[in-house]
Length: 88
Image (cartoon, rainbow, N blue to C red; front, top):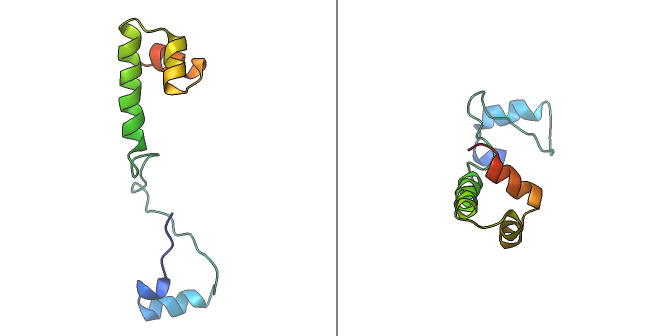
């Protein structure tokens, strides 16, 4: 979450109205319904993990053992098994 100064982005009239309720504190303004991004979409993490999981599955089906994959990717054996045996 990024903080921005209200005075640099809100009209003076609106800023004064908000100051009637709160001054000098942080206010969280949520996204409109349907505008919220899913986890990892903004940073690209979701895409990175999906690509990583494809690679893990490929290596597994080429004969690499789950234990080896866990060591290589620094993941638990349970995590590797969820990736390999989960949604095929």
